[in-house]
Length: 163
Image (cartoon, rainbow, N blue to C red):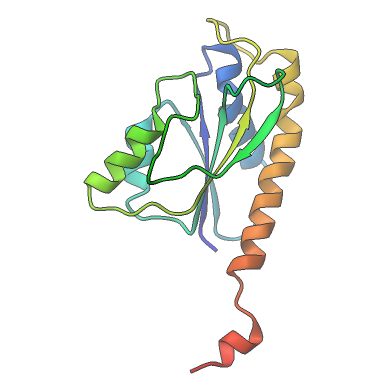
C-alpha cells in the first residue's frame, strides 16, 4: 500500500491549522505499512512535486468552509477533471496544485479530502474549541479511509491465481 496523508493549512490563521493538527496527531501513531503522513502547511509546490511519484491514494486534511456548523467534518471526493476550489482559507489552492502536477507530466491519484468547518480564520495561533474537538474524530475518519483503501487494494486469492 502506498498512501499519502497530507495535512494542509496555515497555523497562523486559527482553524486553518486544522489539517496540520491532524497530520501531527497521525504522525505520532503507528500506521499501516506504506502510509506516509506529511505536514505540507501552505507549501503547495512541495505537494505538487511529491505527487509526481503518485501514491495509490491521496488523503488531504484541511479546513473547508461548506456552510455547516463549526467543527462539522466532511469527506469529499473531488472531481479532479473539474478541480473546483473546495473552500480552503489558506494560500494553497488545490486546483492549482493539481494543474501543476498535470503540467509537469504527472497523473493524479484518487483523492479524498477530510475537511472541517472552521469557526475562526483570523490571525491567531491555535484552533477554536469546536475545531479542536474535531481533531480526534478526523483522525478516526482518516483511519477509516486507510482501512477501506487497504481492503479495496488487496487482491483476492482468485485474482492472484490468474496468470
